[in-house]
Image (cartoon, rainbow, N blue to C red; front, side, top):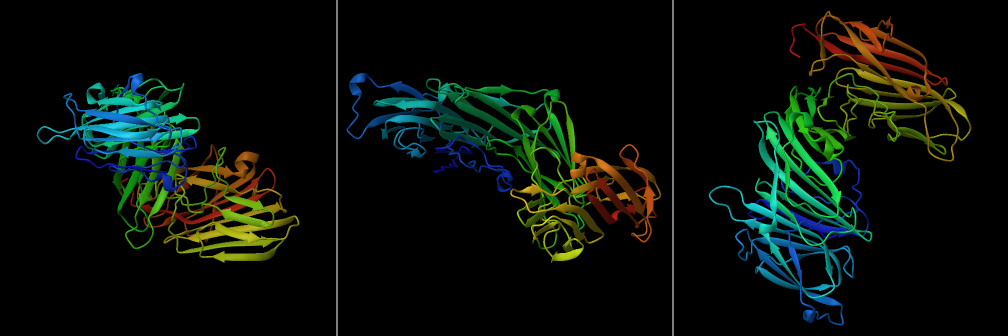
Length: 561
């Protein structure tokens, strides 16, 4: 794969590449890192190229001079907005067929007219032509894209910036300031996908399609525009599928056309600091804009639902030495006018088992091996941390009452055990200690050797008290705390569920009735803590005992939220 990038005085960056496989962006944690500034990224399995646009004119038949090698002469003439020849350009060719299929080449930036020898075949051409600014304004950028360039003769292409039309995307808020934008084109032909893009920090962006139409639906284009505002970001993206690249684009969405995402940053036990929230479309490269959110603060994103699914990455850097902790919320859809809130790094920390279709399994048996990746310290909203904060961790497995093994010090809820093949009763216990408090989950189930990977019937109970961003609740108050069952019991059904509350760190417990999916909790004096315990049996007789010592602490009733 060849990748080209440009950092020109025009404040624009372009790159292109091609691959022999249709585009299929990888969904990995590393992919979720947001593109900030002018970086160019290429999705796994896809070649990407960004180039200025062009207009094609076939040479007279008398000039067809293909040699025995099957190559032709391609002449490219670059004209600026004033119609005069220009050397302020970057032009790239991506081969979609022929002997060079899957590769890209950059055309030399000067002189204004360039002649190259090109093998016969189908190409994607894109050209970015820059216009020098007047005064202190940013350079203008004209991006010309020809998704279908069939080289079967000597040809001359005139790449004329005057063919481009404005890209005018603006949010419906007066306090927004433009930061950066990206225009993208992805073209597929006979199993080869070429990708082109232009990224810029200038509002003066114009685009144009050149040449004939491609095959039906062969061109996918999208434009993303990012604006900053006090405490927030406007992320406006639009995507199209058809036979042509874009020629201009005007979008002025109304407030009701957008969705709102509110991110609340909890105060981690390690102290304050600032989290970086990266928010970008799930599909396709984007020059997304990161938003710093201080601990205890709030950030707001206004976004366009029609861009498709979106990914959110919340990264908190601890004040002391150690790895940054990230939470990933991937592939979420939104509807116009909706408002969604995500709170990170607040209690109650505990196991979270995603029961939705297609969710990644966290506890499986394959043959004689039990593999566990249970997120034992997910935050109060159920977000799974990449580097959870803990001081001790233990996972223990018993088979028919006999200890199999104990794993200590690993990531909470993570372990692997090899067991005999025969069917047996198992007790699996995972615990983790945090700077204040601890979490323990003990499961019982029966299991035997399997021929394929089989999910273990584990369940979890989530507790949802109404807490401030520092993780506290007001003292001496009575409130309703949500109780939610996840995992195997949510699928098979709950035979029994008992919840108990302690205000003396588990020395004594008082049962709390679950009504309407909630329990009633009366908090103790300021500085004390509420502990919680759930005892569950699912419809198949598998059990869970889950205990949270010091699940959350109390504050004076007048404390800020």
